[in-house]
Image 1 (cartoon, helix red, strand yellow):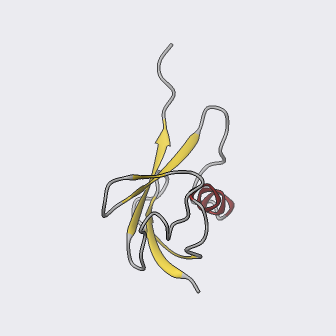
Image 2: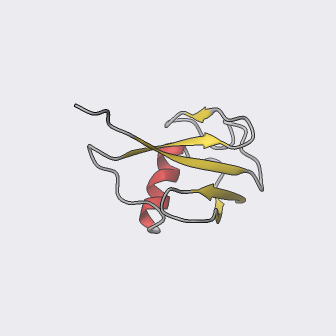
Length: 86
């Protein structure tokens, strides 16, 4: 069974409505968003994380959406990790 989640991604002006499996981990979810061109590919200099919109807490890479408390209709923000200036 899937749930509908709105992903706020850096590349899109509005949130993307996506039906996802609640048992996907944060890392698997990011890979799926890359696969459907919502995100640029992950590289050594570009990494992403997920933040639960309701709690404002990060979703750890190995944690499932369900375990992180994400529910049908929730917003999940995709944040890009920035490399510091050298």
